[in-house]
Length: 68
Image (cartoon, rainbow, N blue to C red; front, side):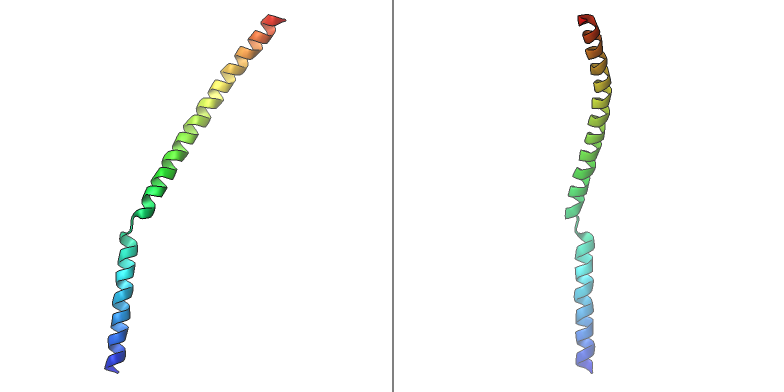
């Protein structure tokens, strides 16, 4: 019986160490940060292109009417 208890505590210790290493691991945080930055840049680009598209459309309409 003492051998079983010792083995049980050994497994528990290994599991706790693995959980501790998992919680301390920050390697995925960089990928999430880069994804958030890319999403922010994409949102700004979409807004800028939409605003620019409207002014370019107005320019082409005025050039088209001037050529007629």
